[in-house]
Image (cartoon, rainbow, N blue to C red; front, side, top):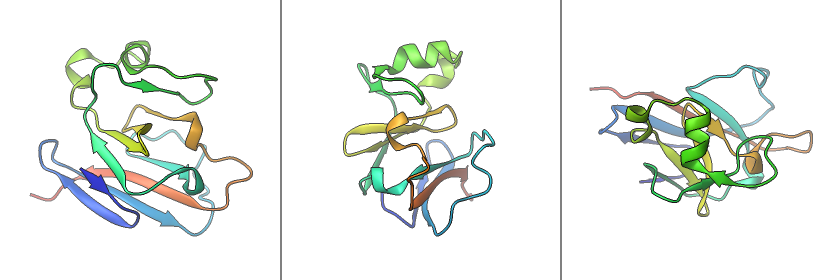
Length: 128
């Protein structure tokens, strides 16, 4: 499934909606860990984003890590239950995993002191 900036997409299999929204100023709530959204450096992301489930062999560079690791290992280390792993939404930009919804963000798209443009990815329950 594809997601453009300032667009919402429904994911009926998960009963979720995913939105990518441009923010015009740095959010005050960056320090709080949330599972339902993430704020990223818009200049490090290429739209449209691809949203899918995980695939065998997926690799991901977790926040604070110098190099990519296997997504499977990352999920095991984060103690994500096996039965939940196949339902996770994986968001990719230009073929790179940038967010595992509700679990982790890529170091490559984190907000830094040099970030000027912000994008918020948010998951919400979809309307019936």
